[in-house]
Length: 469
Image 1 (cartoon, rainbow, N blue to C red):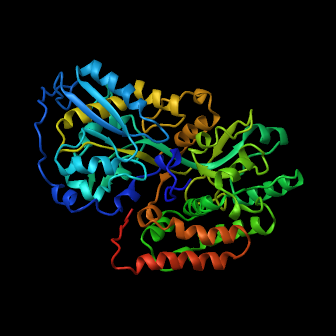
Image 2: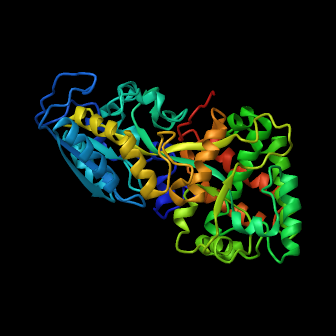
């Protein structure tokens, strides 16, 4: 489910964290104390060494509060046991579903936890506590528990979602991979090849129709999954300029020729009857079940959370697999293997807590081989630590696909945050449901999306996020 919708679940957790940065301030008391030195006694620190890079003191307590959403929190307990055994610390890992409500008073009092998973619908706005957060560059410069520099073990650009005003203050732990998902067993049975271009996808739609199936399906709360697909395809085709125009809310940004070409391809799919009818009146997981369980549709665009989200409504032997999003042509500016991917699930270490060194040490433990592997194996999602998911994806074909897409993309990875930052997804759902229902055409969709964008761009009360690269 898109990051801007209300329900909180695994799909919400896997998204980037900049939407949180735009949240309203938590109150004058919190804002006023954000730069304070903190209250309470600080934990004693030990000597910094190569195996104790932050100088966490033996016997010191580490207080961690973890968002208890779709991932649960016991994976942090797993890492804490590793840290405690190695450093002689005493970690207390506690769950929460209301991070802001429960931790706002602690920030205001100068005694926040040492490590926080700042996630979920009730996360703390980064802008309100930025000055009281520890910078985390030293975590990435430290060696992991296996003796390798952490910065050399993670995927490219994982610092980006947690960097605000030039400061890296949030370590996003899980990787989200966006792609197009299909049933490997269904494709094998019909001799179909996963499409790489929009024309190939439309050809597949015709083949599926002959089999009494549809190419795509959508649900009313997830109509903008097709907006994500369209934007990503257009960026791959036209390059970074397409993304930058959208990020910076440029006039007529939705009229970009690459975006328009993708919209036209989608319009063709609508007119040819390649979408399961009635999506605008269907709850999104019920619509997704028409793909994953009933196999009425053969393709579905989504993030890598889709397997876990539909695990109770997926046909036995489905073999869920993912591929990169389509390009318009075989000569796109960015290679077909290019993907949209971003780190999510932001972890922070308050500088005003009692034991910031302990918070960083627990973070280092989470980035160890054992802890990161445990997360992927039990949550069927990759972490930012690369190379830990085996070829069989712990038995998950979807997880296997995600790691393969990340590996094949290499540095050809992009992300954008304008929808999250400005919170426009609810407004965008309206024209997308109309478009996919065939009630408006490409021109109508473009006009509606541009009006939404222009309204934000022209509102001087809204702080703008300027993106230059």
